[in-house]
Length: 305
Image 1 (cartoon, one colour):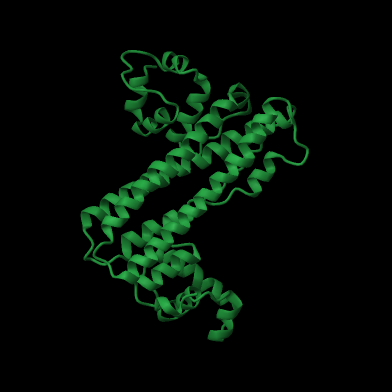
Image 2 (cartoon, helix red, strand yellow):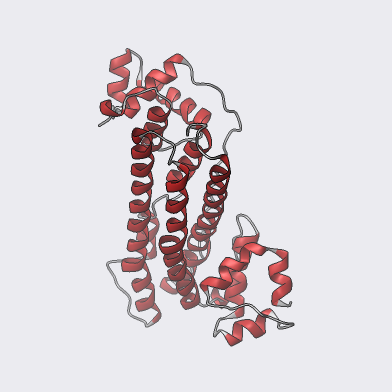
């Protein structure tokens, strides 16, 4: 297949090319021609392309054995650099322009939420760069570390999508109408694109890197196929008075038992209300719900811990 035709079939693969340092001007060259020119294993390149093209793509053990882990590590490292030094910089610049008409309080909570997300992402990538990638590189050299395994990576593999999803919902629903709607749409496009890219990044780690490493750790074993499917309701109703009360308590930093005691209800009822609040707002994290409550006037910023 010609490389130009591959990109025509899925333009999202341009991101893959960039992170491998593959430059344009393909002419009539095939995917294999371009990969060989860039010292990249063709089958491994196509593995990554399949993740970007097919949702929930999970290669067989045979395909994984033929892949080159060093190319996967190269791709992940370049992705980390892109997210921190390009994608987040673009988000920050657009947020700054978008919230200029907002009050000082609104600016403060949005910037704080974004800063927390950025710090979370930095911590996530630092763990991968400092622990996971060096471990795999040593493993490729035949140096097995008995105190570590790829299973520990899965245990520490934090969710980096939730806060970004919450930021998207806050921008979409809770910023004042004085904000420039063209900038709002532009920012939302950037967030949706980053969200999709991060989903693919996580899938490459979970469905390619982890099972590949398991096959090196245990050559006679088979990678476990582990799928986690999340569904979300399209319903978006207004919060009830009781749900607003619960939201305020969450924003004020109360735990479920404390909320139950304050409102004289059971913990199970609190949990049900919180699920309904998340379903209706589309926001999952406590930090996101706190910003939502402040921006919508349900709670004063001074009452938030």
